[in-house]
Length: 348
Image 1 (cartoon, rainbow, N blue to C red):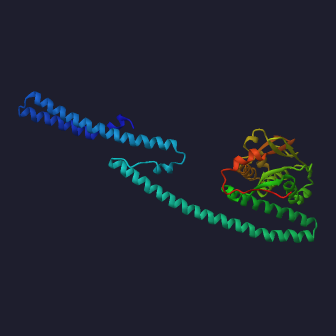
Image 2: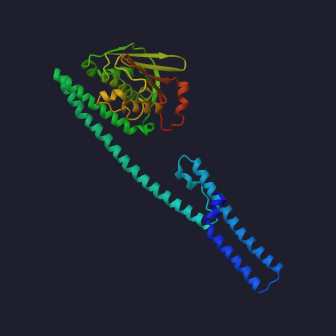
Image 3: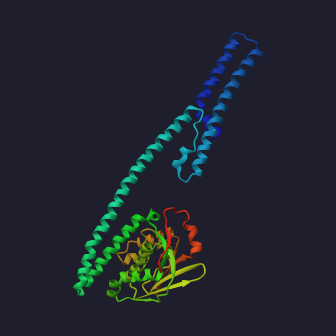
């Protein structure tokens, strides 16, 4: 708060003071009060008026400067009410009381909004789980009476299941840590599950998968990692890969999973943005089925799990997705803050 701004705000009071001083001087002169007494009286008046102005300025300045400083420092501005003390002037008290009422109303509305969102998410998850049952039954029935047409139908139903999983994991992504179950998992086993899950699409699109089947154990949530790998395989199928190579590399500090395909590749200009929400790039313009959500969800879940994910690509040559898992000694500190996370060992 600047003193010049304060004076502008108090301009009416200053004119009233000057007007009162002038008339006081005028009356004292008319009644022929001796000059030394006039000087003393005017000095007392002007000193009192200046003292009032400075007192009002400093107590307001301290409050408003503190308010401005805290607002700049706080990331969550609504917490300002927890830091403010009631000032010793009426305007400040009114401001603080108003902020408390506004904050209270905002929290009540936010809690109500969260309640509605939670209800919606619970319904969505329930609906997805329920609709998966008849879809699984249809696939089972078609497998028992398999034909060329049935293979196409199975492939399309599989895509429906994948899209529903994408919705489910996206809706859970914001609060994913409450659903974590971290344990030592067989990476080979998870990869085999993903390949088996996509066998119809791989066969239908004549895609060959080369996996060395090297055994490796990592700390992760197998369900969430399986979804991540499934999204990567789906992208390889979607973008015209004919061969997918899966490799595992290990050193003392980490385990790296490489999924490399020989599809259409990604432009260098698009590569830094492929993990952004809803970004489809040039490839997405050619493939109308692209939503730009798959890799975004993968990146988000990897971050929450403590894994890193990156992509390397050359147009019309290859696309390689690399997921790095830290070894136990480096991985454990990441999750010390998650009280709801369980860590145990899987029976080998």
